[in-house]
Length: 155
Image 1: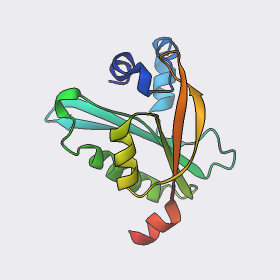
Image 2 (image 1 turned 60 degrees about the vertical axis):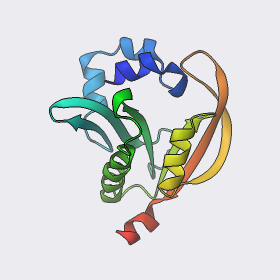
Image 3 (image 1 turned 90 degrees about the vertical axis):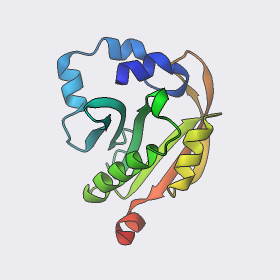
């Protein structure tokens, strides 16, 4: 599913398809080992129709920041608010992962569905940066943060 998402929507991801094509089984197992990270599947019965992930941010040496990423829902299932299930699953994981004090998420300029979902789930815009996207272009990335301590208190 991850490879399908990257192939279909290079413009929306920072991950490069060529890198993932070179992944060995051990690389995928590391991605899925659950140690400070989790990948979730969205199913229609037994059919996988979407994925999302949450993991410790590599940009925070303290290990206190979780980052939401890899969200993809099959086109026929979009617009049905299934992304709310992604947020719920990631928030539950994050609340239980005590090293984290904040969550981050981002989107590329023009990705309005991501922007709306991010804001609807309580994130605050913190800034923008220029990013090299996997489609080979450089464009603006919008960065958001959520206070995880406040989220824990609300649960």
